[in-house]
Image 1: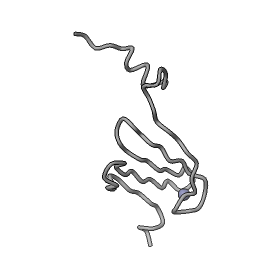
Image 2: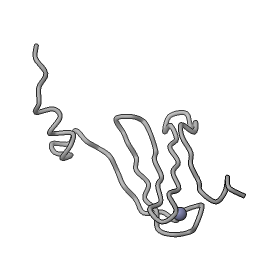
Image 3: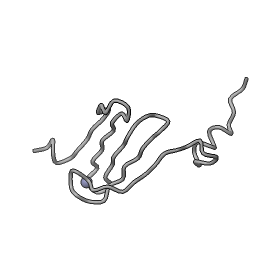
Length: 77
Ligand SMILES: [Zn+2]
């Protein structure tokens, strides 16, 4: 069986209910600005990122474990 390019397209555009990612607006825990939280159902990840201060937090939605975290300002002090 060959790779189906249609599957990639479906994921990219979130069509046909395959991509169930959810994005909500949150307050950045680092600088308080508007940040975005992505619920990545397929990867079982929750990703919070702030465009203002580059804050980044990726946690596993199943275990709550922190996969990756980056908060400028917090670690610099
Ligand atoms: Zn921020």
